[in-house]
Image 1 (cartoon, rainbow, N blue to C red):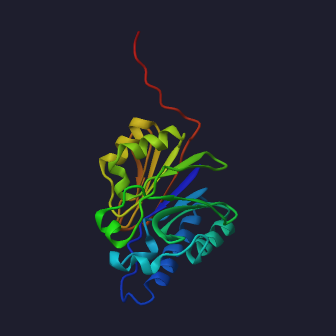
Image 2 (spheres, rainbow, N blue to C red):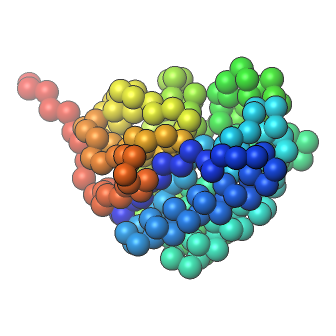
Image 3 (cartoon, rainbow, N blue to C red):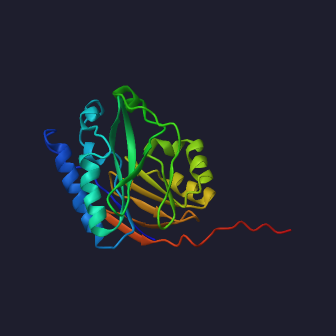
Length: 235
C-alpha cells in the first residue's frame, strides 16, 4: 500500500475566511501528494481550524458530510485514493474532534472521535469519543488516534484488538518516541500528520521510514502489509 502524509500549519492571517483559506491550501497539498499515487493520504488534526483560538473552534464545526469532506472527497474520487480528513465535527448538539475516513469514491466511511480531548478542548465544548474505530479498506485495516490520545494505553489496546494494520495519528504535536513504541509494541505501522515539520511514517519495528521537513511538506512510502513481526524465544 502506498501511503502519504502531510505537514500543514495553516495559512495564518485574519480569522475572517481562515477556514476556507486553510481548506484550499491543505487540499492543494493533497493534490501534490497525489503525484506520488498514494492509496491513502492523511491530513493534520483539525486542519480547517488552524490559526483560531479554541474558543472559536465551534464556529468551524460542520456536519459529515459537509463542505470539508465534500471538497476532500472530490480529490479522493479524482485520484481514486482514501483521504483521512480531520476536522471539528458537529453531530446533533455535540461537537467532536474527529478524523473522518473518505473512501476512493469520495464518500465518508465513518468518523473516529478523539477519546481524550485536552482540558482546553473540553472547556471549549468538545465531547470525548467513547471507543476506538478500525475501518476495513481494500488494502487492509486502518485505525486512528488523535493528538493527546497517544498518552492513553486503552486507545492503542483498542486499536490492536480491532486488528489495525496502520494507525493514523493526526496531531498538533509530533508524538516523539511514543509513536515508535506503539508501532513496536503492537506490530503495526504508525503514520503521523502534524501541524509542524516531522510528520512521520514508522514501521512495526519502531523505525522511522520517512518524514516531512521544512523543504518537503509531503512524505510518501510503500508499506508491505503482508509482512509480520514475530517474537522468537528460545525453548
